[in-house]
Image 1 (cartoon, helix red, strand yellow):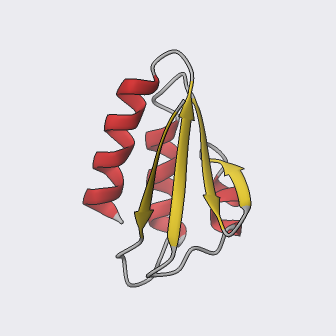
Image 2 (image 1 turned 90 degrees about the vertical axis):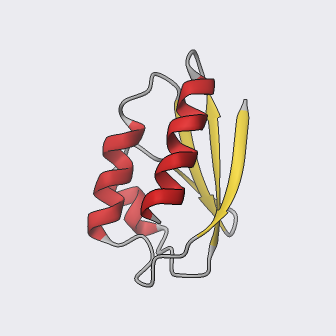
Length: 85
């Protein structure tokens, strides 16, 4: 299992557009990807669940990746967060 934490820099947080992009990115990988904030965890492939976390600018999220291609998923998602959020 690999994981990383990230502080959200997008001034609107993870709202509809970036949540959709995040779900699309997460679905590229065979690994199970979990997004956590304040003790609540959701699968990153479920749009409404991701939006339900209500992640705002300045919040810290943890991304946990486990599965067959977790190294590729880790690198891809880390780059996605740095570029988009």
